[in-house]
Amino acid sequence: MLALSSITILMVVGGFAAGAATKVSQASFGKTRDGVEVRLFTLTNDRGVEARIANYGGIVVSLKVPDRTGAMADVVLGHDSLAGYLDNPGPYLGALIGRYGNRIGHARFTLDGKQYTLAANNGENTLHGGLRGFDKVVWTPRELPDGGLELTYTSKDGEEGFPGALKVVVSYHLTGANELRIDYTATTDKDTVVNLTNHSYFNLKGAGNGDILDHLVTLNADRFTPVDAGLIPTGELKPVAGTPFDFRKPTAIGARIEQNDEQLKLGRGYDHNWVVNRKGSGLTLAARVEEPASGRVLEVETTEPGVQFYTGNFLDGTIKGKGGKVYNQRYGFCLETQHFPDSPNQPAFPTTVLKPGQQLRSTTVFRFRTSGAAKK
Ligand code: GLA
Image (cartoon, rainbow, N blue to C red; front, side, top):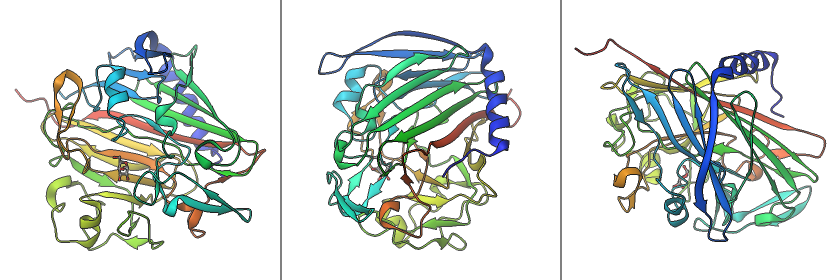
C-alpha cells in the first residue's frame, strides 16, 4: 500500500535540493507534566519563511509566510507555550495524528478474525487515536543535515487497544519553494491499522485575525463520504455535484455553510472526507485555498486518497491562542490528508491495514504562494 511512484520520488528529491538552504535551530519549549523536556525547532528557508515545530505531538506551532506585499503572518493556530497545548488538547491544534486519524465507529474493529476494542473518546467512537494519541506523546527528534526535522515514535503493541508495535518516522522539511513537506513512514511487527495526518488549522489572514469564511477553497474531488449523526461515514461515495460540498471551482467557505443541508447540519459545517481525484499513487493536488485580501494561497498535495476538510466548527472562543487572541468558531480550517475515516470497518474503502514487512509511506506538501498584484 502507499508505495511512492517514481514521480513522487523525483519530486521528493527535488524537494531535498530546494530545502538545502533551510536552516534548523532549537530551543527549550518547556516540560510536560511528567517533567520531560520538550524542544522547539525552528526551520527557516532563504526567503525568510519560518516553521516552528515541537517534538511534543509533532505540533506545528507557527508558520510564517508572506502576503503579496511580502508582509509575513503566522498562518496556523496555536499556543505560545507548551502549557497552552497541555491545557487545551481538544482541538488538536497543529498536531500529528495517529495511530488512526479521524473516527473508528463504535470504538472497535475486526482484523484477521479478531476483534479489537479501543477507547471511546468521542461519544461511542474513537477519535484521532484514542485517549493518548500521537498528538500527546513526546517524539524523539533529530535534526537532518539538509535542514529538515525527523521525529520518531514507537507505539507499543496494545497501545490504545491497537495491535502491533508500530514505529513511525515523520520528517518535516521547509523547502526553498515555500513548501512545508511532511513525509510519513511506518512499520509494524503485527498486522495493524494506521492512518496518519497533521491537524494544522490555517487562517491565511493570520491566526486569530477573524474567521475563514471568505477564504476561497477548491477541492480536487468529485465525491465525498457522507456521515451519520456520530460523524461516521455511511459507506457511500456521494457525488458532490449539486450539493454544498461541490468545491470543484473556487468557492468561499461561507457561501453555503449555513444552507439547510442534512450533511452540513450533522457536521455543524464542513467536517467531512473528500475523495481526492487521482491518477496513480503519486503526489496529487487535493486542495487550493486563497485569501483574497492578503493574496496568500495554500496548495495541498498528497499521496493520500482523502482529505478531511474541517472548518473549525467546534472552536467556541474558550481557547486563547498565540498573543492572547481568542479562537472563535470557524477561525481556522484544516485539510487533513488521510485514508478515509472508519476504514477498518468499511471493506470497500482503501485499506489501512499495515502488515509486518511492509512500509507505509505517505507524503503531504503544504505550498504557499501569493496571487494578484500588490495593492498600492
Ligand atoms: C477532526 C474531526 C472533527 C473534530 C476535529 C478536532 O477534524 O473530524 O470532528 O473532532 O478533528 O476538534
